Image 1 (cartoon, one colour):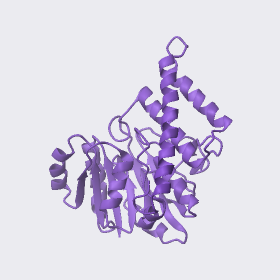
Image 2 (image 1 turned 180 degrees about the vertical axis):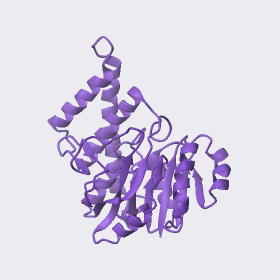
Image 3 (image 1 turned 135 degrees about the vertical axis):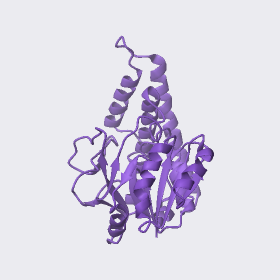
Length: 302
C-alpha cells in the first residue's frame, strides 16, 4: 500500500488544485490524507471532504510542518508514505514511479522530480542534492535527468518506506518556523543507518510557488532568523559538534546581513537576536540527543 500525505496551511484553494490532480490517481494510491494546520481547519474540513470524499482530513491545532508529517505517519496504513506539498500538481505517472523505484534493492527513500513553475527555478547545480561537509550548506536541483542514489530528499516530494521511521525516528519537531532543514536532517539519519535514498526523475510533480501560506508563513528577518537557527541545529546534529571556521564564517555573514540597517551599519539588537538563535539551536541539539539516548529506537524516536 502507498499513502499520500499532504500538509497544508492557509491555502485551501491551492490544496483543492492539488487534490484535483491526485483524484484520478486513486487507483494507484491506497489512501490520501490531508493534515490541515490552518486556524479555520475544522470549518474547511466538511467543504473539502464534500468535494473530495476519498480523502482523510486531519486538523492540527498549531502549525508545524514536521509535526504534520509525523501525524501523517501515525494515521496512515501504507507500507510506503508519499509526502507532497499542497502547492503541487501531480503527474499522472508519479505514484507508480515511486512504487517502481521502491522495488529496487537498497532503496528506502525516493526523492521525486520537482518541476518549478510560475517563474521559479532551481539554482544552477550539476548534482541533484549535495551537502557541503564544512558548512552544512545544501545545494541541489531536483529537476535533473540523473537517476540514482543521492545525499538527501526534499520533504516537498519524497516517499519513505514505513520501516524507515521505525529505524531512524520521525521528523524532528525542534526545527522551527518554515522547518527548513528538517527533511535534510531526516535524510542524514537515513543514510547514517546505511539506507539508500534514490532520485527518480520520472516521478514528477509541478510546483506552483505561492506568495503566502504553506511554507511562507514568515518573511524577512523572522524567516532569516529561523533559517540561522535551523541551519545551526542541522549542523550540530549532522555535521560536527564543534563548529568549523567555514561554518562560523558563513553564519557571521548571515548575521551581518540580517542585522544590516539602511545606513550601512548594523543593529546591535538584531545581532544579539542572531546570537541568541544560535545558542538556542545548540540547546535544542543537546535536547534532541538526550531524547534519542533515553528512548529505545522506534516510531517515537525524535
